[in-house]
Image (cartoon, rainbow, N blue to C red):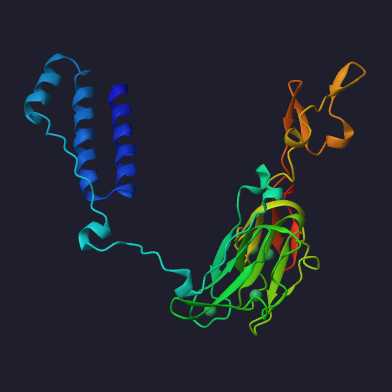
Length: 296
Ligand SMILES: [Ca+2]
Ligand SMILES: [Ca+2]
Ligand SMILES: [Ca+2]
Ligand SMILES: [Ca+2]
């Protein structure tokens, strides 16, 4: 009997998976499959009981599969069409100069969308690694206008930009903008409610300088304000820059050279390249943050 109990558990798990992912047709198929599983398990029952059940249940229904149609197949229309940047105004190209080609820069740069001026139209902020970051305001449906110059010092030309996020960090109803950089501090642009932004990351304790990839905002502690999770990589790869890096022996023990302790660690006497830690920042409600990574 423990065998049957186990089979019932398997059936439930499969039913749950299918219900959430693929819909009715798939559910029917899986129910049929579970039914077959039940029959197989019944074979483990003793003699006459198993035979009796087999007669009562009859032959297993035939299992069939039918692929679900996508919305585009149902309507005959494509789900997405590509719009020409010359028509939309979104003409930016992410630049990465050949002389700056490094593994840690080949991740590319990010983009974020949000209605920063609360006019009901979603706007776009795009990051460029070697070029200028751009803020595009949507002035009418599918028409964007480059407002980078008038919206504040958003170009980020001093740094290799990696990612950006819109989030209302100070709860004033206007989206603020957080930009991640490599080789320079991250930037937090506070929305001035008049179409422009002012950078204030240092005052708000989120001017982390390292190799940030991307920032994600969520109210993890459910106190009504958006907290910040910062994803970090490594500034550069020692293995790439100094492939002949050696360990040192101190009192007969291998140690990492002090100059590289932030980049390397030893695991079973083998050098492992480290990354910068990710950071969780807690918002005080007014858009001022505190690093709570260790205590959390
Ligand atoms: Ca807008
Ligand atoms: Ca705000
Ligand atoms: Ca919060
Ligand atoms: Ca808070």
